[in-house]
Length: 198
Image (cartoon, rainbow, N blue to C red; front, side, top):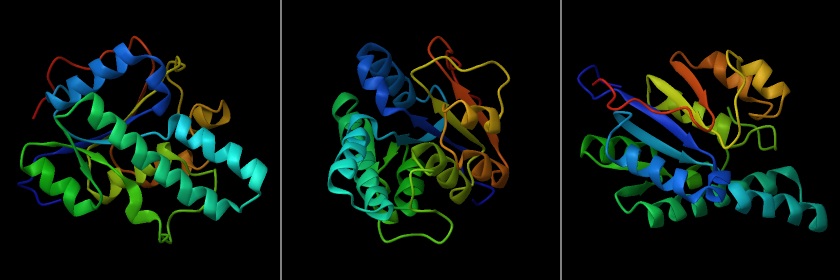
């Protein structure tokens, strides 16, 4: 990221928050209004990803195919988020994430670019939207990666503990070690700041 560019944060919003529509709408509105500063939103797969797991159990397609379908699930959730908060703009490439942010918009990432595979990303259920948010944060030089969860998060828990309890995916600790920025995992009742510092 060029030194003159506005510092970005990545905020992963769990798809399970669809079950709490008031919190989800408030959160997306806050992000669009800049309460976390300039951000790129990463959607979880939510129920769409759950449907992929169910389909895999029946059709027995391999984990690579499941991974690609889970990426599609995140794309569908991105469209849902835009339907809830129209100020969000879908971005399908790293360049689009940066350019939309530089133009003052709030991008929500559709990870379709990863369908063809990436050498640093395993195509398995060990890598979900949690780890992909960290990967994206590293790729765009984000200063922070924030995960918004639908359940309570143990105070002071690190990436390994969060993975062991199932609050993040199994690959999350490895991606966390590669990310130089700040990592924050929030549950219900953990409010964002009124206005992030520039």
